[in-house]
Length: 134
Length: 65
Image (cartoon, rainbow over all chains, first blue to last red; front, side, top):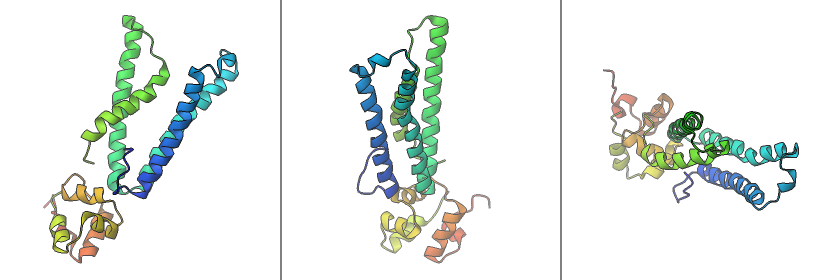
């Protein structure tokens, strides 16, 4: 979905730019956190603000996807919706399975934010196989 | 949905990109209709019919009769 060949539409080009912008923010805040930029606010109320800030690009990405659908033709719109639903369903099923495995089988804890990269990983895997809007 | 879109397009020497531009849709949408991976909406089917100056059922096979 991020490919930008010569036959891509203006809607796709805008989607790629918006996606890269949101991902840059997401990665930048996380890299800063990994390197200790926010260590002094750990456990303090300000950490809730940090959690919201680092999650904001996730909401932004959803907006970018909805905008792509809104600005595209009917085929791209229905294909994107189908790919999104299948990927979200698989990601939720996988993460729910892991959550129950934590509860019942003492599986190691997986932080909730992993659902986002998991979703896009699944999306990247399933999208090439979903080529029909039917 | 079976259709004659590719035949009509090729008769006129148009590419999928050119047909898509004439219809206001992407090349991917034209390809998906030609290969029966997408059933066009009524609105798009009528746009195709107007472009080729033919009734809708001359281009798209009625699956119900």
